Length: 357
Image (tube, rainbow, N blue to C red; front, side, top):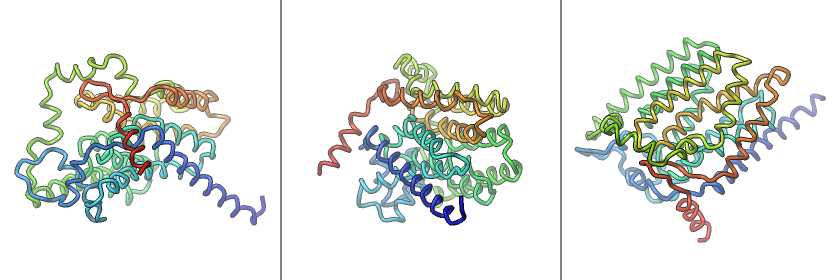
C-alpha cells in the first residue's frame, strides 16, 4: 500500500467504526426499548445536594444526577434518560478503539456487548447509574496510564460505591493475571483514586446535610438469609439464564481458549466472575448486579483473546462466541428482580409511544 492510500484506508476504518457504533445503538433500542422507571433519580437533578435527614441509599449516587444538573436537564425526563443511556453508548465507543482488532472482530465484540444482559438493563432501567458504571468499568479496565486511572477510580466511587469496589478488585485481578505492563503504578493510582473518591463523596454528602438512613451495604446486610435464597429459588432455573443469556456458551469457549494461551489469565477471568456472583447473592436485583459486575471482565478478556495473532488464537473462539450471540437474539429477554421474572414489554411500549408522537 502506498503512503497516499494510507490516509484513505484509515478514514474508511474510522467511518466503519462509526457505522458499527450506530448499528449497535439502533440494535440496542430495537431489542430492549427505553425504560420508563427510575424517575426518582430525575427528581434529584434539580437539587442533587438538597439536605435530607433520612435520605434513601440512592442519594449516594451523585455523579449522574450532578452531571445532569450541570447540563440543565432537570426540565426534561426524556433528555435525562437519553443522557444516562449515552454512557452505555460511550462504553461501546471505548470498545471499538481497540486498535489491534480487525473490523470483523470489533463487530463481534460489539455484538456480545449489545446482546449481554447489561445492555438490556441499561435500556430498561434508565435513570439509574448503571450505564455510567458500564462506561467507567470499561474505561478503567483498558486504561494504561496512572494519570487516567486515578480520576476514573475516583469518579466510580461517586457513582455506585459497593459495585465499584467489586469492579476495582476485578481490575486488579485482571491486570495481574493478564500480565499488564506497569502493574504497580496502575494499582497504586487505582487505590489512591478510589480512596479519594470515597472521601470526597462522603464529605460532599456531609456538607450538603444529606444523612443516608441506610446505605447500600446496610440494605444488603438487612436481608434475612431466607429472603436472599428466595430471590434465587423463586424464579427457578431461569434465574441462571438471566445472568448471562446465551453467553454461557461463549464464556466457556473463552475460558478454554485462554487456558491454552495463558492459564493464569483464564483463572483471573474465573475469579472476576466468582466475585460478581458472590456480590450478587446479597442483592434483590440479581440480573442487574451480576450483569454489570461480570460484563466488564468478560469483554476485556474477549478483546485480549482476539488480539492474539490468528495462528495462535483458538480457532473455535469466534464461532462459539458468535453462536452465543445468535442464541441470545433468538431467545426471550427477561430479568430477575426480587425473585420474580420480568419481561421488556413496558420498556418497548414506552419507546414505541415516544416514536409515535
